[in-house]
Amino acid sequence: MTITTRTGPLNLITDVAGLRVGNATDPTIKTGATVLLADAPFTAGVHVMGGAPGTRETDLLAPDKTVQQVDALVLSGGSAFGLDTASGVADALRLIGRGFAVGAHKVPIVPAAILFDLNNGGAKDWQDNPYKALGRQALAQAGSQFDLGSIGAGAGGITANLRGGLGSASVVLPSGHTVGALVAVNALGSATVGDSPHFWAAPFEMGNEFGGLGVAHHYPDPHIPVTKLASHANTTIGIVATDADLTQAQCTRMATAAHDGFARALVPAHTPMDGDLIFAAAMGTRPLENPTADALALGHAAATCMARAIARAIHAAQSLPDDTKPSWQDRFGQN
Image 1: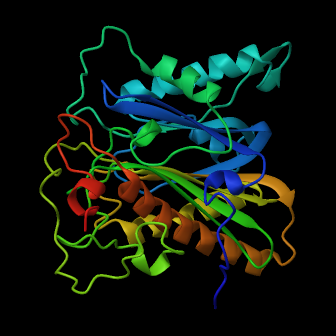
Image 2 (image 1 turned 90 degrees about the horizontal axis):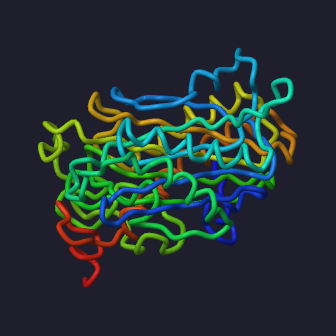
C-alpha cells in the first residue's frame, strides 16, 4: 500500500503548520543546538532505543504523567554539558510568559536530548559551559526555514566514515495529514553503503533530495565499523512531528515507529554505544478520521521521513578545518 504522495512545500519539519526551528552553531567548538517550538504548548512523546542516552525531562513524557504538553524540544551537542541548552531555552521562554502554570509562576517544559561530539576536533577548552547561551541563540533564530548539514545540533556530528549533520524532511499523506522529521546525526554506523556514495535510505528518497543516485549496485556483507567503536562518541537524536490530533500515548507510538527510519538509514543503528532517541510532537489541528488506519500511516510516514532526513543531513554536511572525517560533498560531490 502506498501511503505517501508528496513532500511539503519546504520539505522540512516546519511543513507541519505552527512549528518553528531555530539553530545555533559554534564552529570553533564544532558544536551547536537546535530548538523546535510552536506558539502554544503541544503534545509530545519519546522513545529511546540506544544504549547510551543523555536526556532531560523525558520521564515527564510518559502517558501517565501529569503534564501532557511541552513548550519546546531541544536537540544539542556537547554530551552531558549540552543538557544546559534546555536551561537557556527555558529561561528565555519564561521571560516571555511561556510555561506550565503553577500558582503565580510559569515553568517552561523543555525536554532535551544530547549527542556526544567532544572528540570531533573542535576546541573544547571552555571555562564556562557554552550551551546555555547556544540555547538562547537557537530560540531567537526560530523560524519556518532553516539550513541543513553542518548546523545546529548536527554541527559536530560524525558517522563511521563521513561527517554527520542536521537533516529534515516532510510528507503529506492522502489523508491530508502532514508528517515531518528533524534529526542530528552522530552515529556509530554509516549512512552510506560500503565505500560508495549511495545511501542506505535510497529506496525512500523523494525526488533528488539527497542526490538522486538510487540504490547501491553492490551491498557488502554488513560489518561493525571500528572507527568509532572504542570512543563511545556516538548518538543520533531526532524529532518527528505531525498536525494530527494525537494523545501522548499515540505520540509515543509514533516515536517508536520512527526508529525504523534509523534502521533504514544507518547501519548499524541502536547500538549499545549510541544514545538513539526520537521525540514525537503533535499539533492537534487535524483529527484522525480513521484512527487505526491513520495511526498506522503516521507511523510509517514518520519512519520514512526520518530515513530521508538522515540521508539529507549527510548529503548537505560541509567540512571544517581539522575535521576528523570528510564530508559526503568533499568525497563524492564532484562525481
